[in-house]
Image (tube, rainbow, N blue to C red; front, top):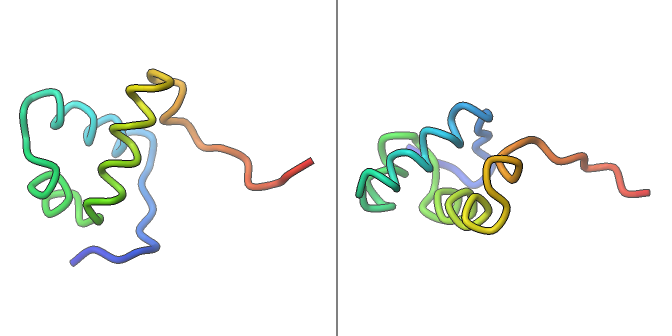
Length: 63
């Protein structure tokens, strides 16, 4: 079961993107990865906008 605070690793994010490129529905990716569909959409959209660099951790510290 997925939850709103599920964390993904870089490799997990790449797997989300690869499955999406392979034609998996977002709901199926979410179920297989135990994350929300919103999480899947976030990483797919970020990859589309920023490429592989968008899948890396971002600092939560604001300067």
